[in-house]
Amino acid sequence: MMQLAHPGVLWLFLIYLPLIGWYVWKRRTSYPSLGISTTSPFRNLRRPLRQYMLHGLFVLRLLAIGCLIIVLARPQTRDAWRTSKTEGTDMVIALDISSSMLARDFKPDRLEAAKKLAAKFINGRENDNMGLVVFAGEAFTGVPMTTDRAALTNYVNALNREMLEDGTAIGDGLATSINRIKEGKAKSKSIILLTDGSNNTGIVAPLTAAEIAKKMGIKVYTIGIGTNGTAPYPQINMFGRMEYVPMPVVIDEGTLKEIAQITGGKYFRATGNKVLADVFEEIDKLEKTELDVRHFSHTEDCYLPWALLALGLFVLELVLRQTYLRTIP
Image (cartoon, rainbow, N blue to C red):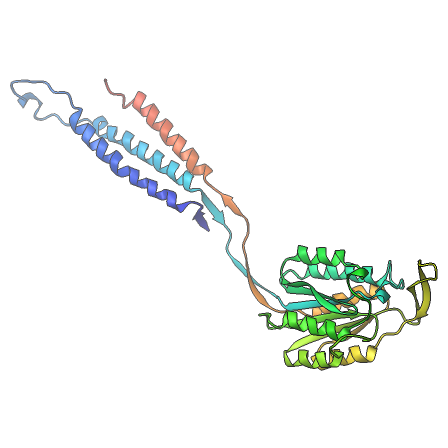
């Protein structure tokens, strides 16, 4: 498809009007005159073809100027538009950053593994409006709903345990996520809630928050993170130093499963880095929605033929003016 990058330049074609007017006026006033008694000997003489061809020089000049104007307008070619289907949703990741998330049954620990995979998941959802909520003994919005992937991933990478008072307020984390996502415009709304423990603090009960999500049509995918059996948990010893002590892994899977069931989501148990990666991949496949997106190929300038044509017309005019159509000054 042909188009012009600067179509307004075509107004320069109006310059033809004064040029043609000047040419006509000049031709009428530039003829030499000679006084004679009679013109009868010249009555039957015809005008030579060369005299008419002299006007062709002016036409060549106008055509060359027209080609230059088209060059300035930058003619371009662009491939046809193509429409494809893609999908966008409203989504919030609610991430537990309590001290138990420092357990080292994941490499290097649960929190760092979750951060890495969450950042990868965020960058892979290009068309989604996403937000981030973090919770421990309390909950707050880390990043409100946005399409800025850089802001989200930078915040995820900067998360650390000291940001909140310790504890596990699952209900508050879910309720805060609902408040962030409820005003979203997408038809599909979902929350990914990742925790490694049981609700032991907070104001809102987890199942109460789940019922609210259900009424608002928000699906909740819950992820219980932690290996089976025991795991090395961080503890402060009597000398004030951090040490890791094997302790039983306790996850309230019953509550997490019920939250997912109430809201129409799904519960996942992640027992290691690879399993957690698979969980995020499965959620990515489950949460696909359709949008119409238009694509087109690159644009390419094609003014060179017009520039060469302008040069050729100027050269042709110059050659004819100095040879076959040369006039006596």
